[in-house]
Amino acid sequence: MLKQKYRLKKKYQFNYVYRVGKTCHGKFLLLVFSPSKNKNVKIGISVSKKVGNSVKRNRARRLIREGVSPYLEKIKQNFNIIIVAKQSIEGMKSPAVQDDVFSTLKKADLLL
Image 1: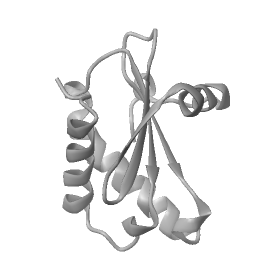
Image 2: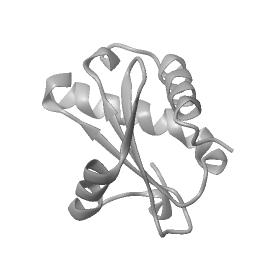
Image 3: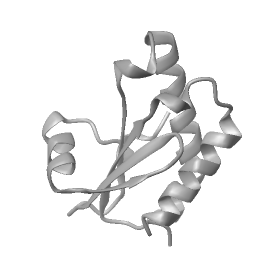
Image 4: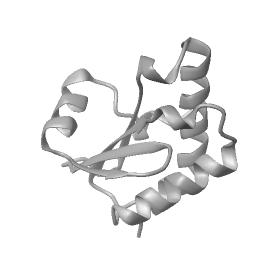
């Protein structure tokens, strides 16, 4: 579970990032990010019903949370980030998702 200070929770926060943010694609996920006034980075996770039933969606959320947690201290500050799972995440293992999170963050130039 992400700590409280790293979570993006409110609907208006998600809407703002979707409206203003830039996107970056990976194999298993899509990154939407925008600058923020917050001191910490805030991360939200979104998984559509296209991914599968509730069991598969919850597994995708857990995989993304586990994939992003080692890089929380290395992500640039003052950003809001939404990670959207793609259908291809279904059936993937944790190391593959973690590598994709790292490469997508690097491609978006969000790592220090």
